[in-house]
Length: 404
Length: 235
Image (cartoon, rainbow over all chains, first blue to last red; front, top):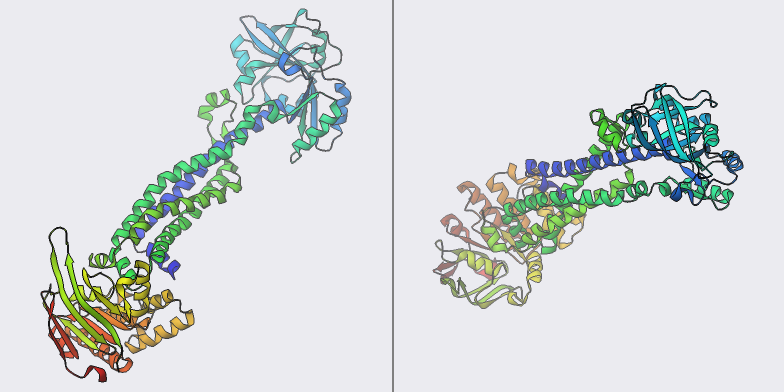
């Protein structure tokens, strides 16, 4: 019956209880929505990085990533690529030669990363062809043609059809240069990438850098749902001592974002709930002070202090049990809607692309967070109710009954 | 021989003893036996409510002791005292003091619930008591929808629900019109006669005093009169 009394008590002052319930609901909704926006933004960024830049797994010579020297090639990369391609979880692979170089156009220059890539494989792995916004993708790998990013094109004033010269150190540590015609200008969702990566056909790169049919990098794109760790282990086994890293190993800062999200989530919700706590304390204190006479009467007729305490606690828990799920429901609906339709932030595209974020953010939040958030809400409600409940049990029946 | 339910000895109560002392009761002796229908009368401030509060274990005397149903109230710790009240004393308040969110039946059941009675037991007794106080048709009605007289009837039924040794009623008719007050008193007298329920009530209403079979008069915190209209042991 205490549960029933507590439930009915919260409806004695409907407006006040609804305000508290709504503040809990809106607080949770805001927290979940903000976190799903943030998570969606980072997940979008991670997806972009995986799909358009890193792929899921990369294989390198162990010293290549630190030294970036063309001579550090992946051993037997062709055979390894064939073996990896035969794995059922692998969607596509690409072998690349990569070297830092200086690029010069008629009225500008910049330090960039020159990537030699097989034109058809690159298309399958990163879809680079689909990102060409001016000019065209390679159609003949025998030509000395180059794809450059839009940001770099802006910086060095290069145009489609114009000539650029690259200077780099070849495999024999000799400075070499080569002239290429800009075949196309690509644009990804990451302007820093667009400013620093230029692509030429793999055979042109091997020729320019005096390399044989070797490569410095083997990028692997997996099918959806594939086990990243399992494939990475298999490739490690096949590659005999080469460095095999998944995207988290290649980009530890992205891994940090994913792994620390739980912590951010709970800290963020904790702050919101802390603010709500004061509202709940205030409401429950008012509810107790308003009912001093009734509480005194209940003590007089034999309701012990434990029951009085429990009754006040239950009232608060009821408020949280109505407001909490309502907030979760609202949050879930919002996440589902914007998870499907996304939020278009194209007016901030410049700033977003600078950090590699998409213009359209699709909200995302794992439902595993819902229960802990609800439990946190109830926990905060319980903590908030302690002071008013103590106030209630400290009432003296005779004095309380005299209060009007 | 009737059983003693209340034995108050040399009870004095002084409010604000450290600052401005106000003597509410001075050397009060009161002996109440089972089945009495006793009125504590006297003008406002004479100490009626203070005496009822002390007998009911809601307040403590400054000096003296009160033995209720064989138990010295001073020997009971706060929680034990609440439990003692639950099982031995029924209360009826001037302002009814029903729980507004509960129906008439639920208000009565609440006390039995606190005593640990089963749902079946609670329902049966609550319905029986509602019938006894003439409120069977208002079983599911909440106090806000009842008149003052009806609420006080429910309050009496609630006080009886725990099968207490006695019922203390502090000015039970003060907030009622004369007809409702008369009806309530008739009902209380009937319960007293039929169930031998002991009633002690404070009042300064002559209509109430008229119905009482024993009248204890208080003035300035002292008992100045104690008259029995009928032999108490033969109620």
